[in-house]
Image (cartoon, rainbow, N blue to C red):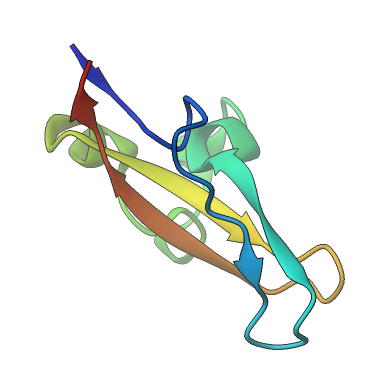
Length: 81
């Protein structure tokens, strides 16, 4: 079984925001952030099809800054658990 270290609390994706310097946070998986209708979003929003991420044993997380709105998608490799 493969597990995502970020989803399971073994990896902290929080980091200083490159735009404003405040602390950016892990918003969880992109799928959880956008909800069940994310498949209807355009490619620029979703970035990488989630089915392709899962097939390659990766988990796609959204890291965002609540202060200025900056965000990025971070691919986290799943590990055996």
